[in-house]
Structures are given as structure tokens and as C-alpha cells.
Amino acid sequence: MKNIFQILHPEVSKLIDTTNKIKRSIGLSSENFMNLIMFGVLVVFFLIASIVVPTFFDLNGLLNIISQQSYLIIVAVGISFLLITGHFDLSVGGIAGAAGVLVAYFTQAKDTGSSSNIANGLGMNFYLAIFLTLLICVVIGAINAYFIVKMKIASVIVTLGTMYISRGIAHVLSEGAQRNVGLPETFGILGKLRLFNFLSLPVIIMIVAVVIAFIIQKRTIFGRNLYYIGSNKITAQISGIKVDKHVATLYIVSSFLAGLTGIILASRFFSGRSVGAEGYEFDALVVALLGGMSITGAFGGVLNVLIGAFILGILSTVLNQLGLPPDIQIISKGVLITISILAQRWAINRYKKIL
Image 1 (cartoon, rainbow, N blue to C red):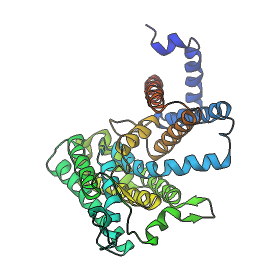
Image 2: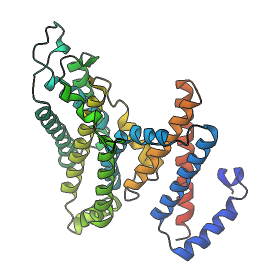
Image 3: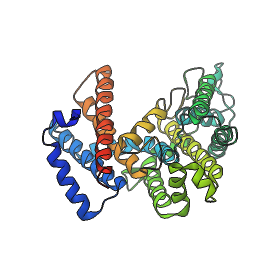
Image 4: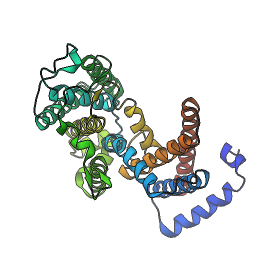
């Protein structure tokens, strides 16, 4: 019986036959096949966007997309490691939001002359505030690791709880608003920093994070161990891999990257906002799955995150420039993302049959 994709596209069978021949001739693995497919999808999205929106194919516009997505990619790099092992982290958005408010609170002058609680802080040195904030984020990551690794509680439950706790801290310290009074000029330095006048700090951090993550995932023993863990945790333990230590490390790194992102966002907007990085926990998961990673583990990597993030960025930019209402944009993105993920799952399942 034909599936929905074959019914909608009669030529699919011919394309699959062609793909089979290509596969046999070049010997692509399932993961490389997915990377190739999703890169092709990214190119198609880019070409369609260039046609639909005449001003899209512009250097400044492309740099803007890269800059906007860099924050999400930094967070998603940590998520990619966890997904490989079959885990995920829903606390990253809350941690990023709390980090932004905490670094502002620590840095604000002690007495600004205002009676408002959110106008006064602890008067710390900005760089000391960054260190202390990142330390708190790492502690949250360690808490996640403890309950997941030692207490054997499902990661979705633990990280959902710490997400709400972290977001609650952000709301309490900012009273549901933002801390932007009494901040020194140095507070905005991270948000304004540019290399060669066009590469912002988050873009630089994104590039460094992606390169390091790719090397670790694909070229190190630690990275290979992560795939073994995601494939079969029990077998990995029997073979001598310290599963708990690996997973715990990943949760700490994920929280650190989320905290770093929150600090840079706060510096960019020159304020600690209670809603900072809101929704990043789900967006990071979406870009990873959209790019071709598997939620069951042992498949994909940071390149899939990169591709997924840029597909989402292009889609968001096009819908926005077309002037569609926000609610229609949300629905449109949801439909297209769902179709894309279903299509890629179908494609990879068909491809596995010819391995």
C-alpha cells in the first residue's frame, strides 16, 4: 500500500530508485544521507526565499539572520550532545533568562536614588558578575545531572522543573519586568563587540562552539562514546564506558552555554529581562530535530543543529517580510516544521531499508 508521500508525489518511487543507485555507488551512511538531504532543503529554502522576497538575497540580510540565530545555536550545541545520548534539556531557556537577570542584578549600582527594588543591585564588577552568574548556571546543571544520573529520574521531568525554577528566579528578581537602571557602560560591551566590523561576539562564539562540538563528536573517543551510550546504554556500561560521568558532564556544559547566552542577550539589550530567551528550550529542540537529529539518540550531530537553525531563521524572516500576522506566522511555521520532520523521517526509514 502506498504511503501519503508516494500518493502526493508519483515520481517518488523513481527518485528512490535513483537514490538507491547513488547510495550503492558512493556508500553514504544514514547520517550522511540525512545531512545531504537537509543541506539540500536549506538550499531550496534559500532559493525560494530569494524569489519570494526580492530583498532577501542581500549580504546585510544574511548577516542579520546569522546574528539572530547565533544565540539559539549556542544553546542548541549543548542540546545536540544530549540528544546523541538519548537525553534532552528543557531547562536551557529558563537558565538563560535567569542568567540575564542575575548578571544585571549583580552589576547594578547599590543605590541609584530610586525607591524601586529593581533599580538597585549589588554593585559588583561586571566581569565578576559574569563569573558568579556562570557558576550559578553550572550549579543548576549539576543539580540536573544529580537527579537524572544518580536518582534516575526522567530528564524531561527534572529539566522541566529546573526550567520553571530558573524562570521563576528571573521573574522574582525583575518583578516580572526588567532591570535596566544603574548599569555601567561596560555592561553593554559584550552586545556591542564586533570583529572586522561585522562579526558580533555571539556569532564568533557560535562558530567556535560549532567547530569544537564537531571535532568532539566526530573525532574523539569521548564523542564516539556518546553515540555508544545513545545506541545502547547497558552495552556501553558493560564495555567500560562511564555513562553517568559522560551524561553529567553534558548537562553541566548545556547549562553553562545557556547561561553564557543569557548574559550576552542581557548585554545586547542592556537590561536583565524576565522574558529573556523565553521559548529557547523548545526552539533548540526544534532546530535539532528539524536539522535531522533523532530524539531517540545515537544519530546526527551539531551540523544538523546548524542546518535546522538556518532553515528556521530563513522561514521566520520570509514570513515576517511578507507581513503576515504573528499568529499566522506561528501556525505556518508549525505546519511546515511538522511536514519537514515527517518527510525526513520517512526518507531516512526508506533509505535504511537499502543498507
